[in-house]
Image (cartoon, rainbow, N blue to C red; front, side, top):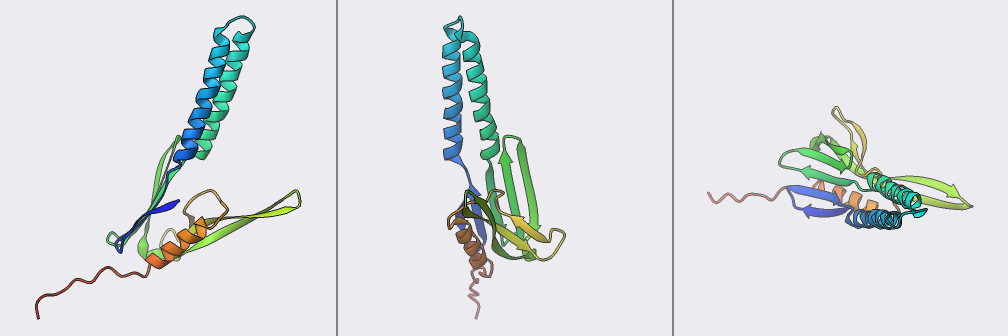
Length: 172
């Protein structure tokens, strides 16, 4: 997720997973193409090719549905709102909250252990302390490693107290 606009009036965060979407599309095309190519030779390869195309293409499509999700978070000072938009293969959702209810942004963490190693993953969350939607609202559903979530939370917290630019009154 990255910051696409940072002005005194708006902060827009967006996650468009282009790389993984293109990679999974190519994965699907390779498996379906190879399967259909094998099936077109006929004989014993017919059923193997059909199975190969359906299984490989199906796994690629399932992964595409699972991992390719577009997320956009708009903090709008002039409208006094926070809009969280999510779009996937299964549909579109939009949640709107009052900007005045936003206390701050934090980073949530989760720890997992496997094979004697401990791994900690993070995600940024918006903390709303008032209104109908009080609570913690994840900016993104998935946890990740690296400094990205901390940088997003810091950017949101830095943007919050910023006042809009003052207007100049030319009358004495």
